[in-house]
Length: 178
Image (cartoon, rainbow, N blue to C red; front, side, top):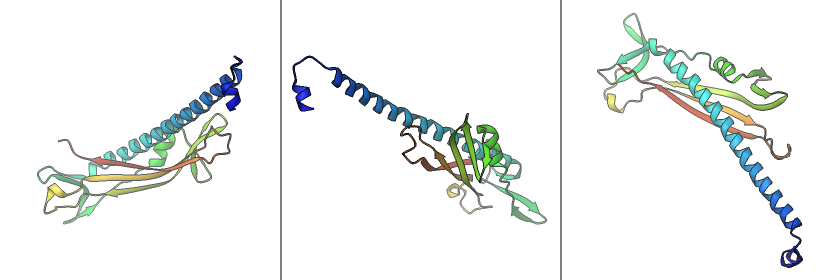
């Protein structure tokens, strides 16, 4: 290789081929990274909109503590306040938003015949604001947190590389405006 680089014959076709292949390899890697980022961001945004939907569907059960500065999901049962929360159908909303189909315990998205990505393991944790806290300024608001597993097979590497598998964390809260 050193001899080819030092040669003064004027034949640069081998070097040109090496440079073109290197540029193609680097650009394919960059485009694959961009594709994975776009898919992960789209799934995260869809999960977040579903979680926001869950938080807003609880609006009718959220006690508006404007004077106290907090809000939480409670209903009056007789003479006592009890926690009242509704998780909703997050997978149903994801399926309709992203066009997913259920297959062997996962929700998958196909681009034609090719698997584009799959999601599973949704875990939703709703944190209700405490009822009548002593210090309303230091109390957390009504918050819905979710985690979901995402797996995207790589299109670069000719299936010799393992798929990208990440856990997405999403938060959404409810704060009354009025």
